[in-house]
Image (cartoon, rainbow, N blue to C red; front, side, top):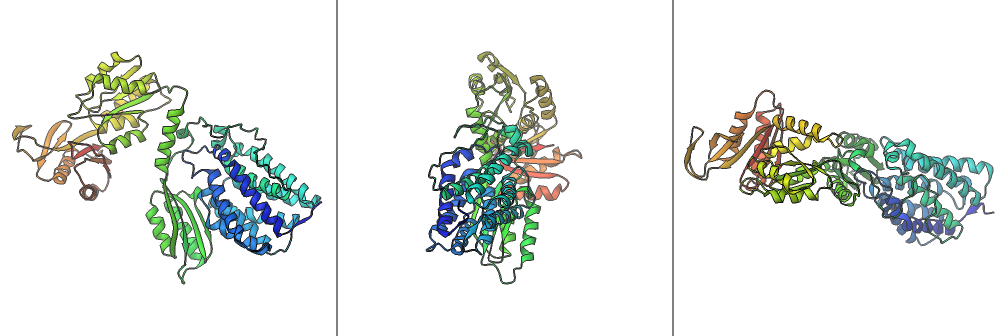
Length: 548
């Protein structure tokens, strides 16, 4: 019966936990079910713990206070992702209790776990149950109860690990997203892995094979969980932003840190917001659409270091593509669109288009091109958006070249195609979708800005070669010698009191300064409308305009 542990044993426990977490990080990663894992939970927790262990290994003595100081410092500085930051605060809270001791008893270890849990909860602006925090709380409660019965570390660890495992299996009942995927919380499993590693280190057990009885979900490592990510959550904040604030200004106070947290809550996801630290350094983790503002707020307090900004929208897109490629079952409905320009293609892909065909004005794909694209879609019912009046007949002809059912939505412009794609409902029937798409495309006003290729007289206008013209529904309604001027005149002709959104797709021949200027001028002129300019990259047309 061992009732206390010294610094050498404590060091060994931490190293064992690091190795155990390393051996099983891929397994923990396999439990991630969110559309964009904030990094991978297993990987982030391991990298955080590894940084703490590396700092610990650099410690030249086995004094518990020195080990705790190094362990805590390494965890905070090496924290990765949401789960890693929470873990670093749990470690920090435990270390702040253990640092006072020359030997660690089960009672002091229990107090440390409780304090770590408190610190973990404080790290999250709006804590959620069913996460790593819930498992941490269960470990702390079990530790508190265990020391009242027995002071032996062997019994102590067995008790807290048993209760932690019970709580872990309950996490799917606390978070619908876990229940939908049939998995336990990855962060909770990661924390339980660490504490099991502590026990292995204490027992001199070097068997790091994963042996949890995870009957809530049996998953092979690297096996894809077939979950429709789009059904589980929606990406509202596009950039995962992390950084440290160090060398704080002399005038900075603890109240300033609280105000920083409040400012970040206004521009980011409050559920994932973490602002932890003191007047020596601050760790920030926030999901936001304006990382520049987050950095600006923090600069008011001190110098920024270790800045990391990840595009979660791009990660989400990649996950969707992987899911589509690896899906074994056929989708009930699919979509194909014809368009030119990388920017426009990205917009369609973000809307769930399965296959894109490069084409449009002056570049009309054949019926065979369309049939080939349709055959690539893992669905027997495929909607096709021609997005040009000259492609509609080819799309109709493609019906004879494939065994699949093609539903041609006669979109004559990119804006109509986007509106139709937005109306798509995966749960709807082909007939319901066709009706909704038809209605959506007809409610969009489409315009285009291009140049005159030869001198002529059309639509009541005398046109000279090289002049810029604006087309409303295919009819020339404005002209000018400047692209932005012609575009503004076109919007004037198209707009009415019902329009609330103005979207412009800038072509490959329009530079950023010009389309930024256009957005500013249109926003000032039509302050009641939401004005958006997207680099479409399309040829031929300087701008494609959509009014809704």
